[in-house]
Length: 81
Image (cartoon, rainbow, N blue to C red; front, side, top):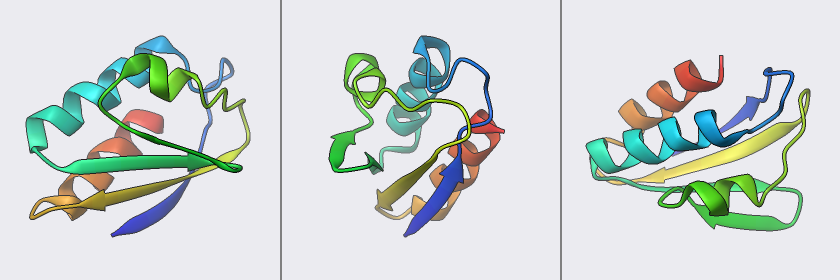
């Protein structure tokens, strides 16, 4: 499952948001990949997510694989809202 999400936070995809995404991904036991421009990272590392350097107002693509893919996409959507 995949979904495009808008980064609304004025600081972009920062450490706190990245940490929440990593924790949620681990809790759901789902493989989550985030893509911004031509860079793709898995959501198992805060530093990897921050390396995307996504600013406010830009979209990222979130891809989730596993039994709870839809649930983790919903959770990440809430985190980034």
